[in-house]
Image (cartoon, rainbow, N blue to C red; front, side, top):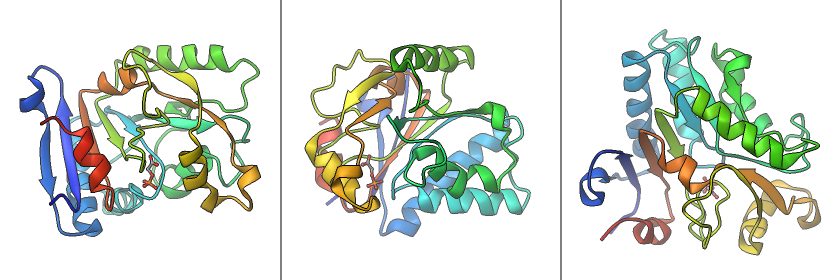
Length: 228
Ligand code: PGA
């Protein structure tokens, strides 16, 4: 049974070849495996482009990256980062924004250059244009070398809810009720949870050269996402 799993994906292989599943015993071990992949990549290619995710899943990974940085094992000075998604209508300084989360859990704790940090602008006056510019910025950076992913209980990745077209690049999404409910735990009341977000699309995510996809306690969603 898949209790915890980490999968890696890359291009240039058939679907069966390109997904590797690793079942581990607990959250710490899952975070160890994910951090080994990221640390290995950063050592090999210090100018890597990394796609980051928010939520509970990658917190252990980020702690390990901060420790590796403090041990001087890795350096973020040449790294470029792209985040998967951001709520529409939340200031970056709002503790529930994904920008705030990333600075609190990782970016303020390592030497990443702020000009190399890309997070969709949830306060843009022109969200459609912000989506287009975000997608262009990913392409301009040479694409994402490694994308970190979690999975929602309804199977969403980023904020791509079930049924999202595979050909979607960065776009504006209406959050499913299930997602709003799941995220309400972080807000003072359900009414404060934004109903819309900007999210990288499935196409943007699948263009990443490697994906680390992990989630404890959502084996049902993960199992359905894997090729049979
Ligand atoms: P989680 O969220 O990491 O907090 O489980 C993942 C998601 O909903 O995409």
